Image (cartoon, rainbow, N blue to C red; front, side, top):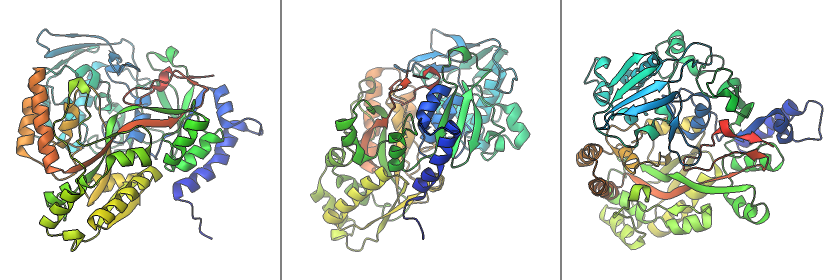
Length: 542
């Protein structure tokens, strides 16, 4: 007889006995969490099996959560404020004009395989990231560097003309084309992580994204943890690194990441003492935990937006009137109040407000009458003549509930049939990245340092623009924005960009995230910041 449970849930149920035995041996009296506390190992739900652990390739949150334990950039983020702190660089100087940064690396640093880590490793890593052949989506954070964009786009062949210069093993200079006040903060992100070229080159072409260096048994990093054990679709465990420069301050002995895509199964595992922390909370359980165990339910602001991508190169979304009609027919306030129910903020435009005083003047209002008028004008009165639209999303019941709510409203108000197609994480990523969809669920977490970080996503050459949409004026304004220091002028340029984006509607913003998860009371030292980064190296268990 075939099971009616979804595959991720069946995997979890099959996995739990093994996890229990791994921590209990013959004992049946203590839960895995209680035994893990004694071992100093934190067990967390991580959403999905990682597609890759190459920090220059990863784009998803499940991958980010792991990669940030294995690598460290020149700077680190303060766990609370996200201000820049010394990381691999113990100090730095900035020139008076804000264009030259000189980083002094910590002496004696090593990769996890014992090979010395020097400024030349960072130089080689940045060259790999910017190489056109790698086709990374994470390059544009380096564009403020002199000639970085030209090298990445193939307009410049000589990397020595890019603004990176190795002075000696412990000194690296970075010269910018224009001031970037948020640079030190963004340098804590994975785009700026070093990668071990001495390892990568042993496993094939270093510019191929499918290079096997980041697989179990071969991955080498410079972060506070190293991979101890990795069994696909089962678990990935990291252990405290013996070579990390600040290893004495790392309190956990390890972290075990479980790829649980089914939120209901994950909550059941938490409730029975299998997990210290969940990745998410099933929507139906939020009210239950608010009422019965509020100390375990954590809900905090999150610097990101939940939205849908329209593929503007596929009918019917080649017509902006159809895109605008659908965007006007989403009752965001009802959705966050009655479906998601975790204090999310309705999103009537893409960019999160409040970052450095940013406020958008462009908004997409709820207006069913106008939506019906636009559909009729596009040739689909009452939805007649419009073929069913397919929405793809990664497997998770929260995504399904949101999609079903919108599906019902569009059918009732517009006469539109919406077909829902859920996909496992890697399949979903592949379809989204290759624009193999009509309508696609998307979500983006951005560093909350400057509102322009949101708007750069939809420039023509952004690796995260997966809609097929581009606009020369939007691109021109962004180039002007990155060269503008005056705050009032920057806000004006961002508002103009937001209006272009909202009028063209290549995306349908739904709400701004909150980070919701369940946490066992034994976890100490976890920080709740806008990027939902713990970090694990400061956590301990009681």
